[in-house]
Image 1 (cartoon, rainbow, N blue to C red):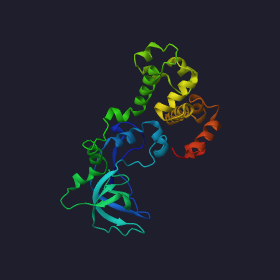
Image 2: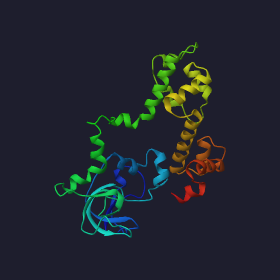
Image 3: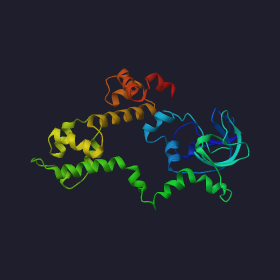
Image 4: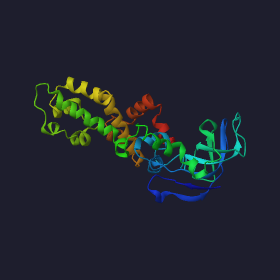
Length: 275
């Protein structure tokens, strides 16, 4: 079958039209002959492999599934074992795996019958794009910038709270002016709570309390996440596990591997195999 595939992360230039093998359904799955596929912002993230933490799930140095696309609408071509809700010939829409192709595999639980009055192109945009847009009139939407920078907004709230806190020590003028630039640019895995407390003009205990209150995360857990993200970035860009470990503040690759296993269930060997 024909499909849009990519062998590495990058801009749209990495996408190619190519002949590949047609997928086969597993238990509980359906093969859909794709009539239309939707495009939403998440496709760009998967194509680029950013943020780097997403590569833990989809492949560190190259995507495990080379075919992009999730939203689809089409006609059921084949059903796998234990599928009773659909039969070949049914018109469906929903979320599948590798929708930018002539055929895509999808879990039967993630498909619905396409209404006869809905065109395939319209139905393909419903699963993600249309439902996201629908949250606007219902009051649940965030702008693209807000969604992309939700973590930064939390850090800004932290600084504003620190400005208001005033535990008797003089705050840095940048905090007094409500600017979050220092924290966004300098808070990395190498920073200590004392660094942040000094910048805020607070005691370490008060800074720790405010950090949890405003971000929902303990300070050490946040630094650990920053370190793991840095390690994934270095390794994904071609560095060795040892280089990734040192860049992220871990003592060695074994330390990094133990941490990945504890948090994600992934060892250093798994990282190599998951490229």
